[in-house]
Amino acid sequence: MAVECTLSNHWKYQLGKKLVDVSADTFKIILMNTSFAFDKDAHATLADVSSDELSTGYGYTQQNKELSGGSWAEDDDNDAGARTFDDATWTASGGSIGPAGAAIIYDDSTADDTVVGCIDFGDDITIPEGMSLQISDPTIKNS
Image 1 (cartoon, rainbow, N blue to C red):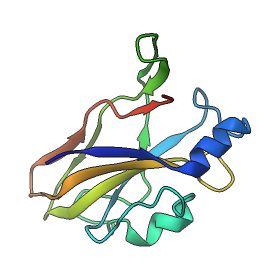
Image 2 (cartoon, rainbow, N blue to C red):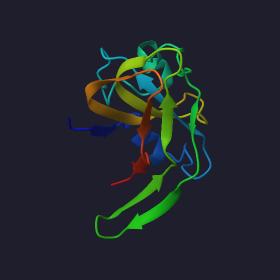
Image 3 (cartoon, rainbow, N blue to C red):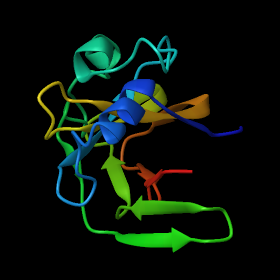
């Protein structure tokens, strides 16, 4: 299972126009159903992807997982900077969550809820009752 991360082109545009503030904005992460296929050109906003978000239930709540904490890092070896957040975790309760095939990070502070990008899990994931899915150190990198 190879995880693939892709930034949306709209996110890059928003950065260039200085319409986002990676330090101060609120970022959220959502889980997507298995039929979702990320399109970096067409999936610009939350409205473009929300119909494929998992339904609320069994420990998952739509558009509720805020990314917080973390740190900034400068990577001179790779000519990049990165904002890393604390782990995002969902624990299944009363049933299974999923299956999910991907996660979307979006900027909840922008007027259009700009999609930052997609974390494609490379495989479908179901979180069984009492188990957790953790995305460790989700990172927005500008390389």
